Amino acid sequence: MFKNYVIVAFRNLWKNKAYSFLNIAGLAVGMACSILILFWVEDERSYDTFHTEAADIYYIRENQTCEGGKIFTFGATPGPLAEGLKADFPEIIEAVRVNWNSNVLFAYGEKRFREEGKYADPGFFNLFSFPVLKGDPKTALNDIHSVVITRKMAEKYFGNQDPIGKVMRLNNKEDYKVTAVLEDIPPNSSISFDFLLPFGNFLRENEWLNHWGNNGLQTFIKLRPGASGEAVNRKIANYIKKNNNDSNAELVLQPLTDIRLYSEYKDGKNVGGRISYVRLFAVVALFILAIACINFMNLSTARSEKRSKEVGVRKVMGAVRGLLIRQFLGESLLMSVLALFLALVLVSVVMPFFNEIAGKKLVLNWLDGEHWLLFAAITVFTGVLAGSYPALFLSGFNPVQVLKGTVKTGKAAVRFRQVLVVGQFFFSILLIIATIIVFQQINYLRNRPLGYDKDNLMMVYIQGNMHDSYESIKRDLLQVGGVSSVTKSSQSVFEVGSNTGDVH
Image 1 (spheres, rainbow, N blue to C red):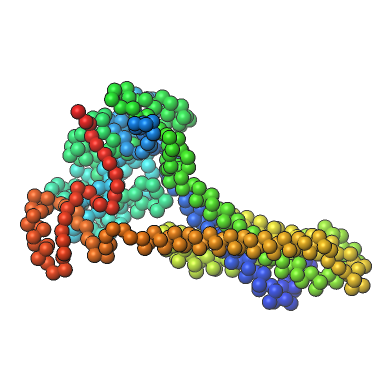
Image 2 (image 1 turned 30 degrees about the horizontal axis):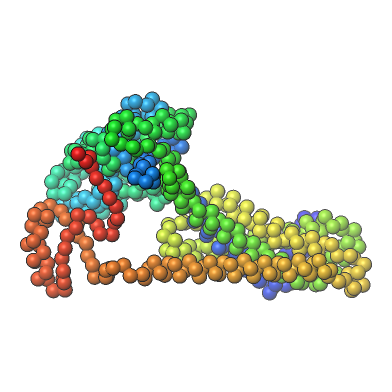
């Protein structure tokens, strides 16, 4: 019986090539769009999940109440916080300090480049499990003159040589030995860097970090397995106040895997963030798939008269309605399978352009079992949804009326098809309007006046004794053809923020 249904299904597809192509192509386009969007959703939800103990790692934020009672939440914390938490709370088995990215001049032989990286405590690798290519991460940051670099940096400076043990000069001041090489940081990591330096170096140049009145670092902690994050949060909430009577700061723990999607706070409470866009795009993917299924239903029911005699003959031969429903659903699933493979071809072709638009590095991995489970779920969902109404509609024909040629489509069936058509156009127009609005917003962001000519503006980091020689450097630059003006600033004018140390 099953073999017969398969043969009949392929025969119908081949006999009606134009209809089959339209249906399969329509499903394929809808499935391809949905797969691309779901890949984006999956990538957003995968941030920081690659760390083996991610469930026990927390990021520490602060709530600070300002005049008027407004509460601000941010991720900057005092320098002594990490060591204090680790010493005073047994539930916390590791705590590390990490600075905001630093720009450092690296030199090896004739090669000199500025790199972006971080200073971190030696326990950094007790929390985070970034893939290590060479070296022992547990001891890599113990020596104050050690440096951990990524594969990209290793290849840039050393080529095919073994980087371990090589000495690099930093900021034209001190030599540092390469103690470990990491795989390039995954794109779905909230923590990004090209190198790591021991935190002791940062501390000796910034002694103000030893005081509780500053907020200049990021702090991460790891809890003992089974420890409750909420319970620990209640215990440590007023820890800064206990060490600094002038502070009104309250500590807030945030799971590591929530940093990407739940970064928005209001009045000291988490109110979501990027997760809203993730949910919205997931719904859009379902809408697109639904539109493709509705198109399939309309095309299937529109040619119902051509298959009515087949239904009549099968019923006269003894076929019950349940068998006919299974037959038509099987045909729908077969077309969904064919549409899936066409959709995957479309996805592989469009993926580079999609990555450029979305700013991602998504890859269609043909050997990923989880992706194939997703494809199977989409195929079954599409096949059943698209084929459900045609199967019920076609299998309900009266065999006597069909064979006499007097079959008529009821008002209910016509009305339902009208609803399908209106629904298809409604969702399509809704998505088109939304796309136009998003395009206009993106176009505005790209072309709005910024207050400066970005094509003719260059920024150079002050290094060495450039600050002391600024006036002479400025005069020399102004004598260069094409340079109209020169100025300096304490920080990048493209960044907005405020900070202070202890005020006495």
